[in-house]
Image 1 (tube, rainbow, N blue to C red):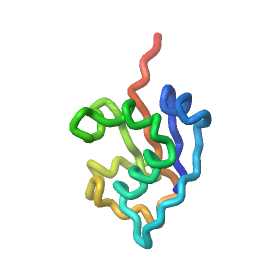
Image 2: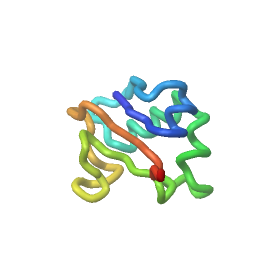
Image 3: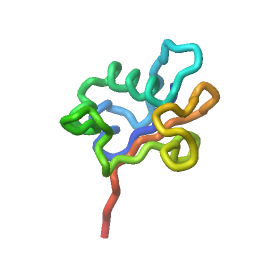
Image 4: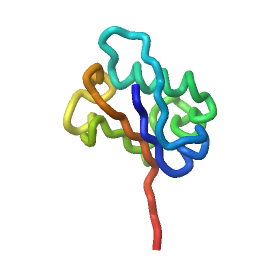
Length: 93
């Protein structure tokens, strides 16, 4: 699964685009997310709260769409997805 990461997340993994194998025939967003964290465990404290839920300020997109608003959240089928993206809020001035 291709993940595009932004800001501090890309700094943690050392690249802004990573390919992560997902060993499930019909992967869900949760399967892909778990595979990303397994491949890059240093991401975990940056993306998960103490109760192992995604931190509220992070956003995940599946081919440019928010799966938590336009699909079924963690259960979204990502088997045909070209790219997942995860990013923290970006501010600037």
